Image (tube, rainbow, N blue to C red):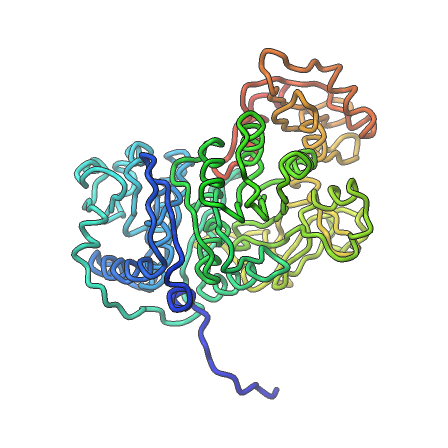
Length: 541
């Protein structure tokens, strides 16, 4: 083999911050603080504070490889930690604020977090963990009263700004190389314990560059980015790193995740790219219909986490003039895998056909390889009809889970990650998720897609949300049951009306055997429908 004669330039996250500071020192990061005021500062301020925070971490005894937990909303302090922990050679471990106490305790102990930085507004969610996370040596509070408020947690408690004021502003990055670990995110744990995805500097650097390519999210210096997706959800899809990398403005909502607050922020800050899960955008759409605001500034409303109903995509584009960009990924993929952007050969399509394309999860971005396989592991064709389990590989895809004990069937012998998603892929590479393997309804030896039924039901004007689960059936093994949240609780649709709405659109044997009406569909910590809870409640009906 003849080796190339190129520099050994290590791909590390500190280089992203150095680049952003050198080229775009004036660009702004703005945060909606807990009590409503807007905090803003420039990238040059971020750079200086990150260096101070690296010294804070060292003063707290953080060594290379140590895990530094974060328990916070999307805010500027959280972004500082995104860069400071890796810059100090440590690992930033984002903790999901929506998990149950026992799950949180398990994750903190499994990760062996040495220090946890806590948004003081979230202290009530951490207090039940007192006595269960004894390995944590320090808690550092921000956005709240003095540090003594967290005395019940154990360990030493500090105030963030007090530590920052006392810290030295000079620091030399303590990064040993691109394969050094820099980030740790745990899956939502819908089955069994959550599993940890341990990112490297190299993987996150390449993910940052990959997400910025024009065929992906395509951020530029002209953009103002609003990550509504939480920073504890797969590193906010890498958007804080991507924004700094290209000099885009960054707007962070803090705890203000309500539709009206988001609409106000988009309008006032002229956000061009906003990213979140479908439940967020569903709520925003209904709020905007009742309380119109000027959100014409948005060039891309990025949606991921689960499939966005085609009817909602159409409504955003027809009624609000907002371009929806479907994306897909996983915690195990850092997370971006696909985007659904129109290509040149779509120009001769009808509008209805275009919305069909945009409802797909899209094509793999450069850096991600995909294949679909059957139950025997045989590769299946990309014909838009044949469906099987999706497998992926690439430089920002995990090859194993962090400290996983025992065997794991998530990885193939030839080096692919098994996603658990059942998909089809068109000849031009557009992937559509038909279901999760565990959520498919197996009726009489045939498969029914719960996702397709949900999307169709949510196109009904009287349906706000719908989730479809499998329930046992003596004759057919399983049958679909639809759990529905009506748009107006005082005027819900009846079963016959919903059946009549579905009948022209699906095979007769796909029609749900029943409907349950509830006030709210339970969500996982990442905003997806929690079908595990629904199966426990309705699964024996």
